[in-house]
Image 1: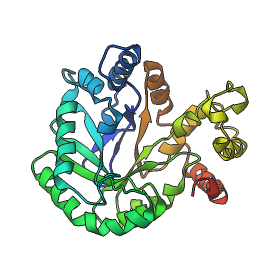
Image 2: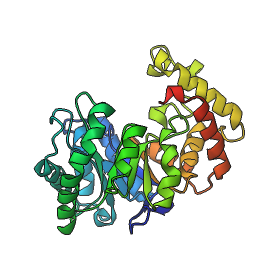
Image 3: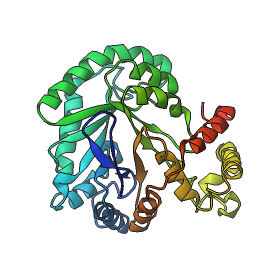
Length: 318
């Protein structure tokens, strides 16, 4: 396992971050899915993963707690958590006490003393830029105040934005409140790469969410014609993305013998990327992703070619 520094901070974490969104049942119990997921988390830690993502929204922290409570490496692990405040139904109002609540419940449930990274989401209803962007300036002051208070208490370290859109990312990063960004980024969803040069100049870091594009960018799903009837990737909403994938295969024929490996290595080839948040539900998935992240990454010319291809097709990822 390789490790990277997050921007200009003192945080150094594994290039792979364990994502627990579906690794266990939402209801606490001893079902097979949850048992397999717990083994996956244990395997990830065994193989050097020291960075873990979570959210109260996933409903899976009970299983994480079962693994982490008495784990011998518990105090060596780093955590990134989602904190959506204001949330959809909050009337665009920032609630500092709710922010504190989300941090402190994570500390308890994850059996840790500090949350290294808070991934802040500013939501609205409807969740449009027309509603959210004007609210950035209103949220900025109270967000910084409660974050600095919690930081002084030793409960948090760094703040990132999860922007949803390019417009929000641009306005959010300009506030200066964030040490970096957590956002969707992969071979097909490249819109946030627009900010990579600026983020490098400012010594900010990037946490990549959905590097395998929900499973599309994997060996199992890469051949659409072999998917069974009823598979969700047969839906027409994926048509343009599969067309894009075929163009990527033609552009990088020497790289795509294993699409899973290429997808992981591609995202890690850019120096602004600190870690990949990957949902892993079994030991086999853990080993596959970690084996792909072996330090032998494409050079930036591959990124530049994929970036040019994306810019020519960005109607599918506006």
